[in-house]
Amino acid sequence: MAKLNSSVPQMLAWASLLSANSRLLERIEASLAAAGLPPLAWYDVLWELEKAPDGRLRMHEIADHTVLSRSNLTRLADRLENAGLIEREICAEDRRGAYCVITRVGRQMRARMWPVYQRGIEKLFSAHVSAAEARSMTTALKRVVQALNEQ
Image (tube, rainbow, N blue to C red; front, top):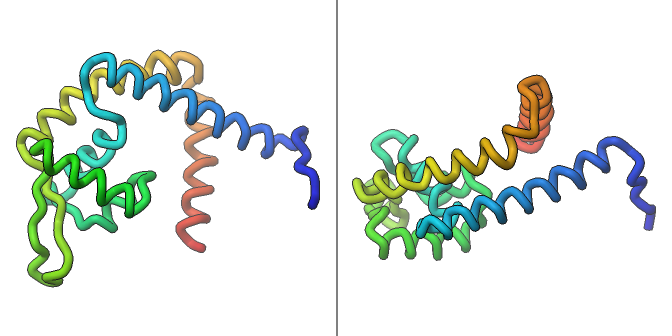
């Protein structure tokens, strides 16, 4: 097995990306919990639904826009539904499928979570990255996502 060369800039960037992602998410999750709010995954699903036409998406569409696996998403949707943040509606085109639909309470919860999440982003990330660095990261990461989408 070939040894990874940790001096290659791409390997260093990869390791830094993983480390930063893990630590940032831990800290933001802790901030949400301290404020008595649900976990970040709840925000992600609610935000995708809120942005969607009519506030509704199929489960596979939510999975495509978040970092959640479909099995984790199913369990999360159950919890969101039990909390009154989403409802499920049978899909008229495919009676086996269902839409997740954000409720008024779900929109309110997402709005309550955003200021805590935003402060975390600003304090833990934006304060340490220049606008030029952010543009470079965005360009590079969008290129990676595009390549992955084309595979």
